[in-house]
Structures are given as structure tokens and as C-alpha cells.
Image 1 (tube, rainbow over the protein chains, first blue to last red):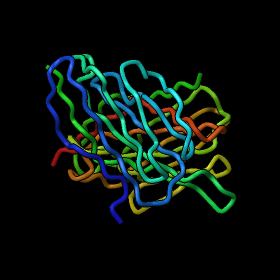
Image 2: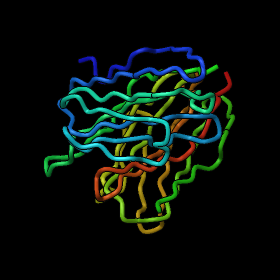
Image 3: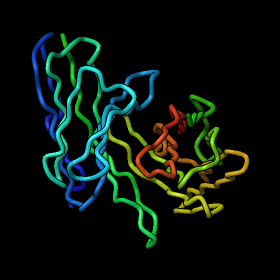
Image 4: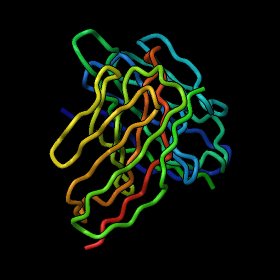
Length: 116
Length: 112
């Protein structure tokens, strides 16, 4: 199993450009998340999707949009990139808990974005 | 709002030493707690998950404990090795299932 796959791994943008980070999971997970990780700031939630067809804002949603394309895919879009969006972006997914047991939050390898 | 704290922020130990990493949280109403490892430039890898009804979980040289009433979890690493060098993060899952709250991590360096 591939788990959680993120593309691209690296991207350099100029201020004002737009781009979309792609995330796909093959574990039949219901919930998907986008985080950013910055030195000294830890992991911060940008947006999440509790199930197919729903999305909700996290701590730092400004400047981002998301699309839950289907159960497998959850994309993050920067409409007009700013230097403050230079960061490492992580996608994660998890199955909605059931009485049958625990569920592990699974992360992708990350996408390193630099905005000049 | 749930706050998760990990102390110390960094730790350096000689190889072979047993060590304990700490994670504290302010709201004891959690669904579970998960410990992760992150290597430089990589994603987070799950190490152990403890349900709120459990007291501890073990995997190889790793043992994680949970004391919900005091808002604390510890990750015990036995006989540390240089390959254990990484940043270790804990995360609590809220009962509404949708939110995870992460600590900022402990950066561990195991010296040969």
C-alpha cells in the first residue's frame, strides 16, 4: 500500500502565483487533513475534511482553499502565494473511529514550498 | 482549547541510556493519544497509540504510558541507539474525532 501520497515534493513559486498541492490516500480513510509545519510553530491545521463532501477550517485557513474531490483525494490550493506561506505542508488521513478499535493518523512525506 | 506541551524541547544522551520523553495536555477528555517520530526532512511516522481506556502500550524498545487524570503521557525508550535520533511528537485526539492537538516535539540526539 502506498498510504498517503503528496505531490509535488518540492515547489518554488513567485509571490502572486497560484498552485495546488495534491494528496491521495489508498486506505479507505474517511477524514483527511492539511497541516503546515514551520520551525518553532509546530504543526498547524489549515483545513480538514471529516468525510467526503465536507470541509472545515482549521487554525490557519487564510490564503488557502481546499477540495475534497472524492474519498481518496484532498487538494490544497494557494490562489495568490505569499512569502508567509513558505513552509512544509503535510497531508494526513484517518478512518472514522468504530467500536472495532483504534485508528492511526497517517501522514504523507510532505511538500516543501518556497515562495519568493 | 486543548494545549499539548512537550518538555524538554531537546535532549542529548549517550548511546545505551534509557530515557523518558514527556507529553502533557490540559483537557483530560481525550479519545486517544498517539506518539510519532519525525526524521529530518520527512513526514511523521506513528510509533504508538494509546486509547483513553488504556494505561500503556509497548512496541519493541518503546513503551508509552497514559495518565488521563493528570494529563500526562510518557514515552520510554530503552537502550537508546544513534538510530533513535529524531524528533518525537505526541498528539491527542478529541472526542469529536475531528481534531488532533500536537505538541511541538522533543528533538532527541543519541550520541555514539
